[in-house]
Length: 138
Image 1 (cartoon, helix red, strand yellow):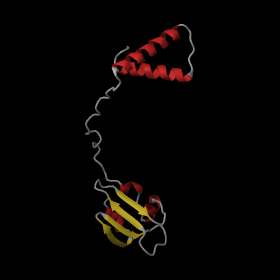
Image 2 (cartoon, one colour):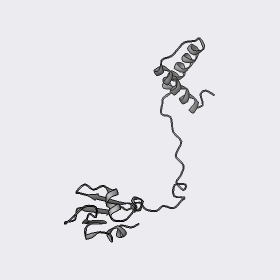
Image 3 (cartoon, helix red, strand yellow):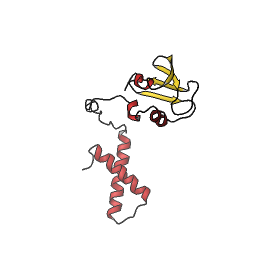
Image 4 (cartoon, rainbow, N blue to C red):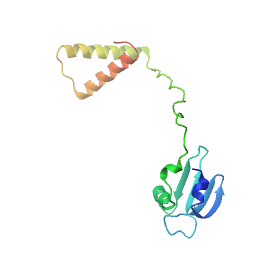
């Protein structure tokens, strides 16, 4: 839907700026325009009632659906995006050694029957996931 479709449902419409209009709000007894309608460059339509009516109330009173405020996109719009770049690890070599030592120590303690607190278990899991992600443990 374009802003024009919504504006055709409103009264006392006047231009207030580039791609922006003021009109009487259809969801309350409005004598002077209190509803701003703005059409974004991406096709989204923004509405704001300065009297406090919600967008849902405004759209319902205009006989339109909330989804009409958003532009229709091609089904493949999101599929055409380039893939996300791989996550680069920013930890230094010294940090890697510390994580390896901490994980190997915890692994040895676990083998010896040591019980860990939930915070320690969380740290061990984070260390293991990090080391797996950078292919330092199988």
